[in-house]
Amino acid sequence: MASGTRKLAYAFGFVSLATVAWIGAHIYSLRVAPLTVKEAVIHLPRNGDQGDILDTLLSVGAVIDTGMLHMAIDRYLIGYRPGQFEIKKGWSAKKLMDQLRAGAQKEARIVLTHGRQLQDVAAKATRFIELDSTEFMTAVLDSTWLDSVGLTRQTAMTMFIPNTYNVYWSASGEEVRDRLYKESKRFWEKNSRQAKVDSLGLTTEEVYTLASIVESESKNAAEQPTIAGVYLNRLRLGIKLDADPTVIFGIGDFGIRRVLFSHLEYDSPYNTYLYAGLPPGPISMASISSIDAVLNPQQHDYLFFVTKGDGTGTHMFAKNMSGHSKNIRTFQQTLRERGIRR
Image (cartoon, rainbow, N blue to C red; front, side, top):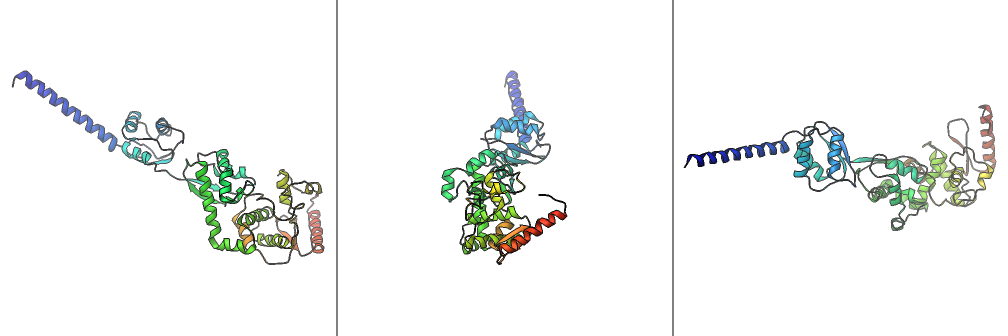
């Protein structure tokens, strides 16, 4: 072999070895070498793209090698999956991309706590997820969906059972709605609740509605079964409920602290001083204790109750108007002794 040819062969061999070495180092860097420098939780929006992955990882300081991150996205990431992802320190570029490509999300939490109106509940439910409250309410109040599950705009609140639920951070309004509705159905199936609903001759929506009134009258769980018994007695006898909280809800002025005679004349289907039976739907989210109080009411002959006025939030009960009038006088005397003028 001529010396020139041998030199050329050696040169090609050297280049080939260098290329192999470079490729090997490149593969090692992507597959083995640590890329992530800290633990972090990142959020990739539903309407985002691969650019959001780069920007988000850099913004939280999870990755500082921009060039390697660019190469990893180009080489390994196929498509884009939104969601909340937990990043561990010391992951290789391939490990990171595998997690994002698989859509291995870290679940988020929805916390349902007491809310007076649907928009209040929606705002609380969407605090820790991408979904905004307006989009969620649109899904909940969709007329086609409501018809399919036997609910109305007035009874939609009955699908919300106070609890903590895990969902995907990027879940749509429909997905969250369907999850919460499914959980509410499970709630009624537990502890013989549906059988108890049937024994009362009511629907689950009616039980929830009555529970919301009980909830508004007293937060004292020990007293709620007694109050529930009063209202169930009145319903059974065809006596109007005369519940002050329903009047306030109908007016829509939740700053009212004392219901006056003028308020009782306000014409609303929620005014149980004007209309017999239950209102069209709940007047707030009902607690589990108030729901169970309606399902397990105290058996008694009481038809009336009034607050004691002693600051405990508890009530006095009576079987007739005479006893009720006496309790009202006691209540007024207690306020006078406390120096409270109403």
